[in-house]
Length: 271
Image 1 (tube, one colour):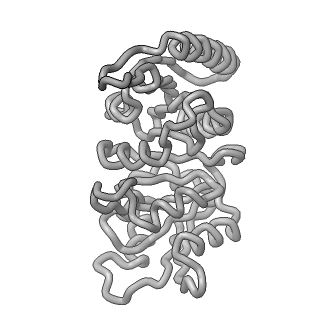
Image 2 (cartoon, helix red, strand yellow):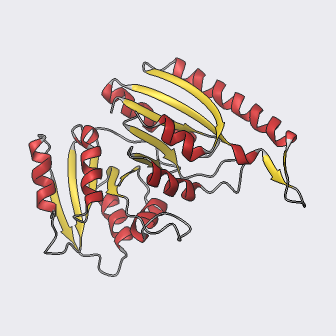
Image 3 (tube, one colour):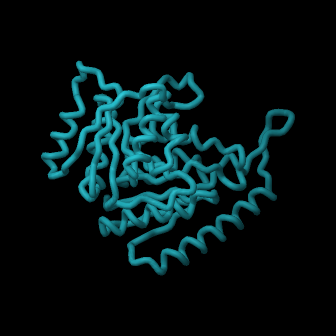
């Protein structure tokens, strides 16, 4: 993956997100694009008469925080042997990431809330981002040390078009993995795209893989996927994002949303 877009914001997962981005860029001799987005709604409040006004104190605090964050990251990147750039914008986060990510190979985001915008809904942003963007999204969990491109990869498989799209999108990473496991939980027998077809597809790209068919038992599918990834000491998990109507608060199917919340390793989503 030659072009990596990193979402920069002040949160607990920023350092691990940066390390994952650097690992991917180094492994591909690619380019890291850092995008610092300040949500425009952070500046605006409503008065009792339905009008809006800009909160100058909050604006000043956020601008100072942005300057500190930029200085910190640029100082770090100066000592890294990678090509990089840094952009800052005040905008809707989803719109900015979709726009800047149109020609990126992957967008890296985190699960943590913004440190100064406590109400900023991270999961809702993921749903909007998945709906609007065709670029794969890597969700970096807080506390994880970062993605190892030559580590073990786990691919969640349910025979859907979304799973196939996720598999194809992750090919540049899967080609570097030391081991690839295709995990099918309670796989139906009449799938149009069974897990063995996924393994055969990878073999055409000179990627060896092992198919693991298992039952979820007393677990949910998300719990079983996470447990399997941990057992295999996975560096990352690849899966299709399965959506429902926007009538729901978040644009996720149950398995996607639960896995996103629970997964302790980087999660690569496509739809």
